Length: 458
Image (cartoon, rainbow, N blue to C red; front, side, top):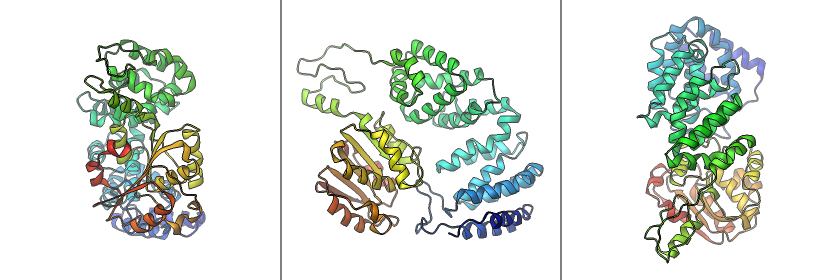
């Protein structure tokens, strides 16, 4: 990838904007620009974005930003042409072109009757978290600002009680409006989200955290009142359980306000004499032998952490699947260089012991380095196609061997992180290792459904 010369980039973007009304020429010159700024050090054989099904040029965000700046005004003044170009960009099927398509939707007047059908269809099609986020934020920019009532009607459809699969879309769409300091009509939003907060599905823990933190920043008093009302009146046991699990991510003053309402309550129930007497939240105890009950009691999901890949997030498919399988586990986001990510990881793990670390690809490298440097803190290490590649990451792999129980799961069809070089390095680092080979590619989509994760994490 050549260094970005801003003057040259502006000239390229201006030239591209000249073809706004000629979609085929626009696409031709756009491909040339994206190819010009390809980061070949990150490009894989298939050029597919990690955690996504989209091909990607891996061009720096600054390139797209400059292109957006050049076409913004023209798109707003010519919505018909903007919509036509957005369709072509979307059909191109690359990460970068779909992000530009989402940007163009945000420039189209909300009165345009063809806007919502495209937004609905595209949101249902997309798997990539970055594109989904753009569709639910950037694409709704003008609707949020110019027709907030229409926008809230759309969100109400997302949050319909009988469509829980779209609740995440509704929450993510609301976040920019809540964060907008010029918007001061919070009660309608509170009315919309109250049933979702009361339902508190464990699969939406990350979304609910983002929502509550955003509401608290917008209006602390109203948010505290709403949450206390929900906790005092809800008959759904998941309400307090889910809010307790995510409360560690709340601002400290909000944690203090809710502490008493979120405190676990001792539950008394008739049990056979041989059972463990302590109540274990979320674990059925009826007809359970003492040995098994003790074992389940020791499985503390809050000590399980998932480290995502280089360009993935906590909203990736595997992260969400793990969070659903092991409610209460930690799935943080990491950004920046390897050193920056390790600095972000350190305060999360702190000095606590008995961690079960699950690391995927680049996250597997993170988990390996932490485990080898702090073996007494790690109970078990699970690595999914870990990026233990001597050529790229030699400086990080100069580590002492450890006896921490380690499981490596690798696909024999992985053409992103080759299996044999990884195994050669792992054999030297881990003296207590199980290596599982599956018939799958790098993302392990098929294998994930077939693996008994409870057994792996034991």
